Length: 272
Image (tube, rainbow, N blue to C red; front, side, top):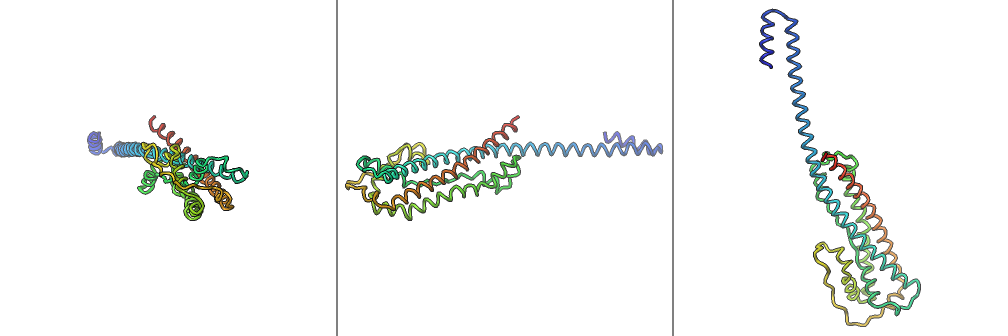
């Protein structure tokens, strides 16, 4: 096509037909411009196709990471619900001045043992961190999802803040109190025997239970701990902080579920 224009241009010049030459020159320029625009459009289309493929791969990895975190959050919430239940049971004994003989030693030991568990949310953030640190965040078209990813670290900090407070409270205050007033060996033994509970904080789900310790041969009386007015304060603190931690976990669960919905929507669009 360009050769044809050259021949026509040379012939036109030879015949001294300036007007016709200008027309052909303009046509030649337009042809070059159109070619460039087409090339740019093809390049843009290829670039968009590559980026959408990368986005799809990122979203699939991100979805798996979110699901893993969601499952872990559910386990932590379940454990804390058991802690709250056991704390309430022990407080009922205190509040109603009920005779300890109405409760089996095993029940009391299980309740106390359960209040010694303080789960922490250990978020899986490898994919999220890679997206942010590698500069791939722009590949995600959903603006709200991009904002949520940017806020992920602060969201985790908010959830783990109360968990850290509880853990420090246990080791600095509650455990020393229990050691002074009861035989923790039996309470730990009772707690570890609860398979439905221990499996929730077991990373290896193929292991069905956690080996418990043997019971102590010492004969124990629990009147001392229930007559100690500090015991009530410790139980109320653990119960309240556990509830707050679960509320924070529920908030993070809501954000994760919203992000999963956005990811599924984006993946469905990209597959069309």
